[in-house]
Image 1 (cartoon, rainbow, N blue to C red):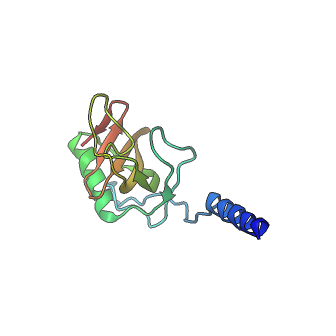
Image 2: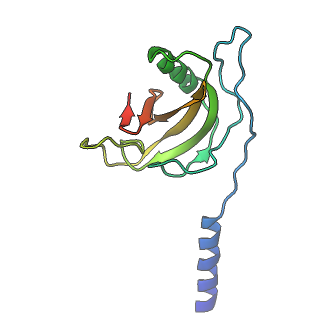
Image 3: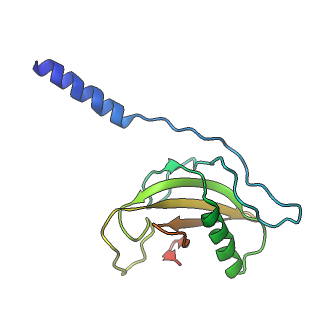
Length: 145
């Protein structure tokens, strides 16, 4: 009986450690005017785990989050058409969204959200989302909303 229980536990552990992901790889579309358009319904996953961020699950970028990123880039004076680099659903370990600023205290609770990386003219922008559609830009100094 013990051997059967041990084998079952081992099988469940292996099942928990394995997984599969799907999703299509595609580029964001652009309108004829060159303005940024809504992202594709497919996803692009990162090739390596981001610094300070838990591993996520490939996810489609909701229209509201894409529009918020485009608006934030515009507010920052970034010109050009953003291209989707990666998008993933992530459960952050705390309110820092995987990008803490030194000396700042954050909510110590799990936060469901997203990490979306876009590129404009060769420069990457790492956006983090918590439970809402307000983007925060992650830089080497932490999150900036």
